[in-house]
Length: 289
Ligand code: FE
Ligand code: FE
Ligand code: ZN
Image (cartoon, rainbow, N blue to C red; front, side, top):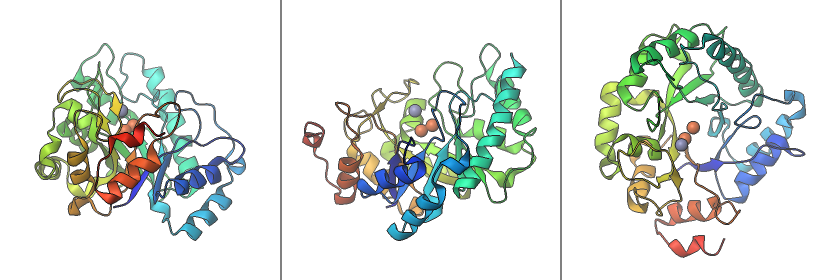
């Protein structure tokens, strides 16, 4: 199992600090935002301690593909109501793609967006249209559209919707998918039968397009379309279903990234990764944090 988690990226260590944090959890993958997820203020890449981070990853034996970047979630390429918002999003996404490449990462996770006051189909078409206005992407970079929970006017909560977006992209080689277990559970997919979910993914999108898995439990019942992450085993999906998803041989090569909530102000990732590696759930680990 390639296991990692969302880590911080902040002064003074920047990306080197992110890698250190991941290593402290015995992770062999990590995901970071290049700045605050809710805004577009960004540092110059020269300040981010990238060579130091890459050296540390090499020493730890973590391949560069296991370092994932997540675009800020305010980027909304699906906004047809205020196209200027989507245009701004796309120009920011362009700089984010360049930062991702400068870090040496390959995968940039992106939420496909919200249709706001339009409708689902318009949102889907608008997302492809705006992504097609992106200037040339760095060689080898793959933007991974994330499967969403379907809260509010969110698009991309059925595999068909992501397939529709992807079908209309001018540069399909630069796109793939990130599957979030909390989100697909909230969207109605049954994690108890992960092989069936993968079969459906394969039929609709194609498993070769799956590059990242976000491994989260959910606070809400299946189909609730809420998007509230829970710690592994503490939600409605349950530890065993998540362990089965994480250890499925068909997705063995894909990094599984935890985005579970802090407990009492402390990151739960070291404990959660340990539980997955041991295959044993122990709810008391969350009391000890
Ligand atoms: Fe996400
Ligand atoms: Fe996610
Ligand atoms: Zn989420």
